[in-house]
Amino acid sequence: MEFTEAYKQTGPCCFSPNSRFIAVAVDYRLVIRDTHSFKVVQLFTCLDKISYVEWALDSEYILCGLYKRPMIQAWSLSQPEWTCKIDEGPAGIAYARWSPDSRHILTTSDFQLRLTVWSLLNTACVHVQWPKHASKGVSFTKDGKYAAICTRRDCKDYINLLSCHTWEIMGVFAVDTLDMADIEWSPDDSTIVIWDSLMEYKVLIYSPDGRCLSKYQAYESGLGVKSVSWSPCGQFLAVGSYDQMLRVLNHLTWKTFAEFIHLSTVRGPCFAPLFKEVDEPLQLDMSELCLNDDFMQGNSDAPDGHFRVRYEVMEVPITLPSQKPLADKPNPKQGIGLMSWSRDSQYICTRNDSMPTALWIWDINRLELAAILVQKDPIRAAVWDPTGTRLVLCTGSSHLYMWTPSGAYCVSNPLPQFNITDLKWNSDGSCLLLKDKESFCCAAVDVLQESSDYSSDD
Image 1 (cartoon, helix red, strand yellow):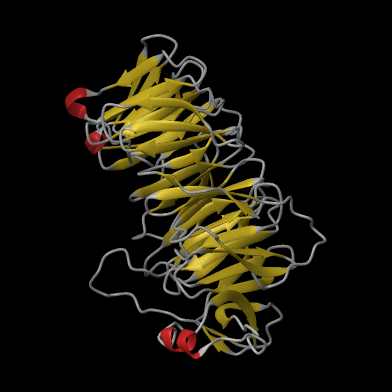
Image 2: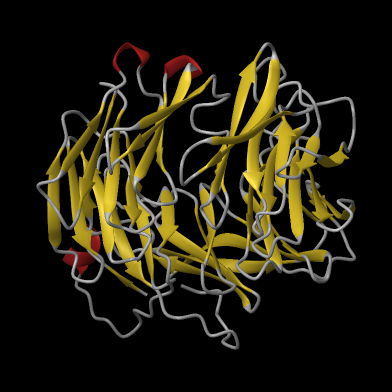
């Protein structure tokens, strides 16, 4: 794995959907770099500090959210002289996103007063009153033809279906939720999943015409759903709950066919490997070196030595580090807060927030635990390779951690004082974007060979 040098950043960094460019926010400036040469290809100056960056799906346009002002500015890579500025005036702007056609921008005003669709082709705009959320509650079909928008009026939740061609409302129907948390179209665009707030365990499956196809409720008392995710194949719906359980529903009957519990103590029989991150001192053979007394006396206060990080396979039973959530604080740190499917839908990784240093990997085909990775620090991000079965995670240390069905291994970042707090894959799986607090770098990644074996060493 080869690493680039570190470059400055003060905010969002992201690859373009076609993987050709990297957009980097540096205070008021938006820097566009070529992914291969890292040369600056465009430099745009905004009117205020950039809080948010999002590429259009065609990689032709890019928007910047200046939420302190509040304002949206959009830029074109092929026409640098073209500019666009969106200002809602007193209504403000809480969030902005692209439409699938890359020619419309959707903004949500402060206090969720309205959602506005702005056209880049003409001066037309469309308003949707009372959107439920600012950054959530909007989902597009995979073919880009329709949008589902959550709204709330008269103390009741509704779904508005809009055509992404004319932006006319195709239908509105009420949903059976107390306080809708979010919404997501299925990968085949045939159904919509809706889940309630943490105060009410309720997962609802609706057809686009407003029929409720299924209602799932695992239990009635206690905090409810924390995360929901469709598998890429569309056959499975994973539901992570505050009771530290992962439940997987099938798309035919909408019944659970798998339940995975995250216990702090792992006992046998357990056939999954448990990889624990450990420090290993580097052993240097200095028996044949001739050092004078002055040198040895001058280095008597030197550190004992350097360490490398590696994974050690542990035996069961093993107790995972855990923390008890505070009873007097909202949004307790417990339950399945991180959940992500592999590209082929065979594996899903989870993190129970009360055990933030442990990452669980489940095999959906075998309906069993595939591996547990136990880190020294809390897991910040875990992202699957978009082209193969490879998982990469970071913990805020200077190392990357990778898992494949062949094993787990650690990779040292050669950049000094660079602690990886976030990471992103580009769309072709050839490059990783790694973020530190005030800088970023990229790492070229070899194409995954499914039959290759990896060592747990650096």
